[in-house]
Structures are given as C-alpha cells and as structure tokens.
Amino acid sequence: MYFGMNQLSKELASLRFYAYALVLTLLTACSGGPPHQDPSWILVQITNVNMVVGEWEGIVKKEDAIFQEGSVRLKIRDNGTYLFVGQSPSKTALGAGSLDIRDGRLIGDTDRRAITFALYDHKGQSIIVVESANAETGDRYHGEFTQANNR
Image 1: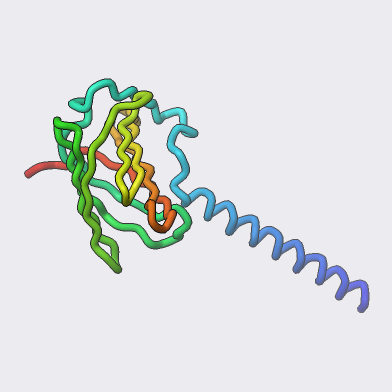
Image 2: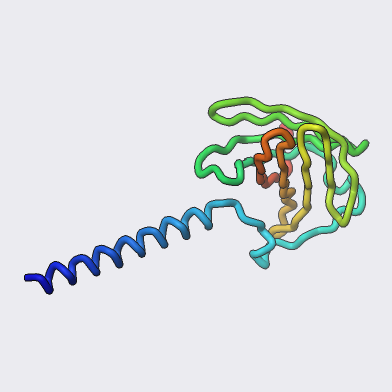
C-alpha cells in the first residue's frame, strides 16, 4: 500500500506541474506579445504621417492584466496630432498629443504618456500597433488598430 501512495503522490505532483505549465502557456499566448514574432506581420516604415491619417479602432489591453481591456477609437490627423477615446467596463479615457516620425514609427511624448505607433501589413490589412506607458503610474498598454469603417 505504501508503494501505491508514493506512486499517487508522484502522479499528483506531475499533474500539478503540467497544470502550471498549461496556465503559464495560456497567459503567455494571451498577453498580446509583439506581432513581429509571426512572419505574417510585416513592419511598414512610416515615412509620412499621411500613411496613417484617418480613424482607427481597436482593443487596448493593460500589459499585466488578464481580462481588463477596452475598445478605443483613434484619430490621426495630417498635422501630426492624434486623439483617442476609449472605454472599458470600469472607466472611460480620452487623450491627445503630437507625433514625430522616428525610425519608421510615430512617437509621442507628453507629461502623461509615452506612446509609439508602428504600422504593419498583416495579410494585406493595415494594422497600427500601439505601445504606451503612463508616466504617472508606469502602467504599460498594448493595442492593435484597424482602419475604422466610417459609415
């Protein structure tokens, strides 16, 4: 009987290990990692703000959150400014700023946030990937935007 209990303990420990590994894998896969790891995402160098002028919509997720995300509407203007309004289940956010082209990306720095916009071609569709950091809290955000259908 002792051998049977020892074997059962080993099996439970093994099962626990695989359960932890599965949870870790799911969290990693759902964390919104950088799209450039997938070869179907091709980085497009932004050489002129007119390449991304218009309205975009997408989902933004806090970097370390599992479920908290919100939809965001983003407008990039031809004068190099952006506006956004977003809504999550618990709050609404809005903001604006100026953008500069650096290293093929749009970069914006304000007292409240640092933000980077990168343009990708993903299977023929233009996608803007946004990485942002809140200057006050240090919270980091990741978003992916497609061109909005203006009806």
